[in-house]
Image (tube, rainbow, N blue to C red; front, side, top):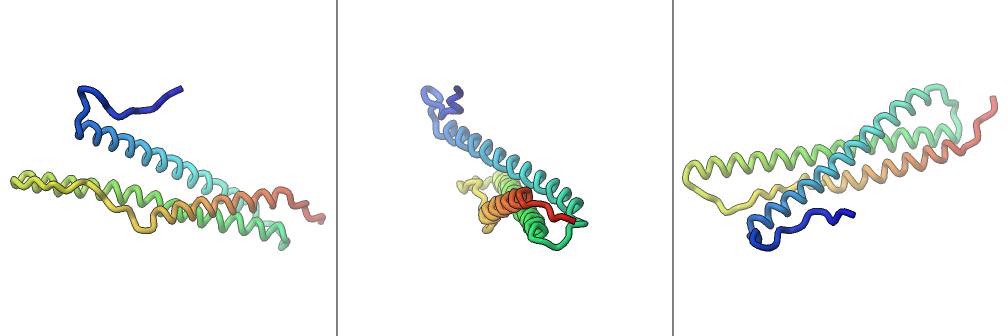
Length: 153
């Protein structure tokens, strides 16, 4: 069983080492969230493509309603997930811009004490939560659709 990374204690116990370790842990967590959401958006895109291809000849019925709800929910989930993923790009760009500013200031002899904090997009976290909700609604609609008996011709 892995205990995971730990904060350096002992002779290396410095503020810089602890901050570096915390930064590394935060970056790993953010990368895991980014990868997970990217994977979900890819799955939703594939599922939406299949639903569109299979649903072209469905007659109007209760099952067709669940099919449409699933397609709309997947489409919204993809859109909201993409907005959230762009929020990660936004943060990375902000870090790059802050680094450039600090390098420019340092080259002119000014050493600012401000950190590298970048505010995320205001609605980025909300988009992530709404994306998950849309994907759950799509999954529930598909489950209902799967258990709906076929219409006899």
